[in-house]
Image (tube, rainbow, N blue to C red; front, side, top):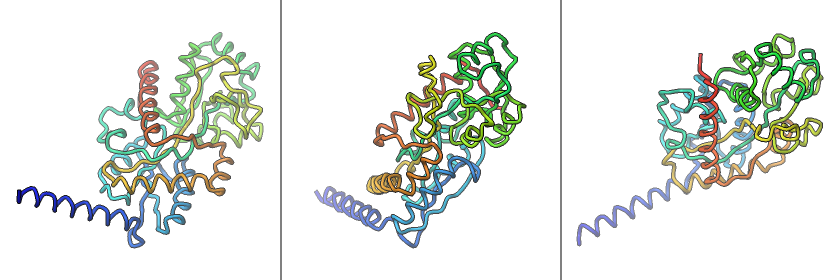
Length: 324
C-alpha cells in the first residue's frame, strides 16, 4: 500500500515537472536552434531562415540556424539525433533525407525513428530544362524521340550523386526507357551554368533554381513534374499533359522534432509553424520561388515520408545509382 502511494507521488511530481517545463517553453534565456544539415546559401536555408525569423517574432525568442553540412545532409541529421529532446533543438531537412537510407549504408540515425515530423515548410516542383541549341525540336515528345534514336549521345546535369535532381533524371530515364549520361556537379549553380553554356544538354532541376534562366530564355522549360500547371509559370505544360502520367516529383523541405520532445512543445511548435507559413511575408517569399506548402497533418506527413523512402529506394535499386 505504502509502495503504491509512493509511486503515485513520484508520478505526480514528474508530471508537474514536465508541465512546468512545457509552460515555460520557450525561455528567453535559452535560444532555439534549427540545425540545417546543408551548407549555407542552399535551398534549405532559403526556406529555413525566413521561417526562423518569423517564428522568432511569434515566440519572442531567439532562433539560431546552425549549418552543419556534409554527406548529403546526413552529418547534421546525425548530430541533431544526439541532441537533448527539450524543445530547443529542431532539424530542418529535405527530400534528401528520404533518399539517404538508400544511398548511405551506415547511417547512424533513422529519420523515421529518431525524429518526429512537424511540417513540410515548402515544396518546389522539378522541371525539365534544356539548352535551346541542343535538340532539333524543344518539345518533350520530340526530345524523347531524339534521345531514344541516339542512345548515349545526350547527357544531363545534376547537383550531385544521390540528390533529388540526380534521381529525378534516373526516374525519367526508366519511365521512358532512355539512355542519357549523368554528369554530377557540386551544387545547383555550377550545374545550371554548364547547361546554359552548352557543356551539358539538359537538367531535371527544381523550378526555384531554374526559374531565372527560364525567364531570361537561356533555358527552355520542356515540362514541369506536377499534376497541374504552376500558377507562376502557366505556360509550362505538365509532363502528364504530354503523356508521362507518373512523372510527378517535388523537392520538399521539412522540419522535425527530436524524438522524445514533450508532446505539448511539439504541438505548440507545430501550431506556430502553421501560423508562420500562413503569414503574408512567408507566402509572398515562397510564391517568388515557385513554392507551395502542401496541407498535411503530422500523421499524414509521417506516412508521406515513409512513402518517399520506399519510392526513392526503388529508383536507386532499379537505376543502380551510387555515390562517388
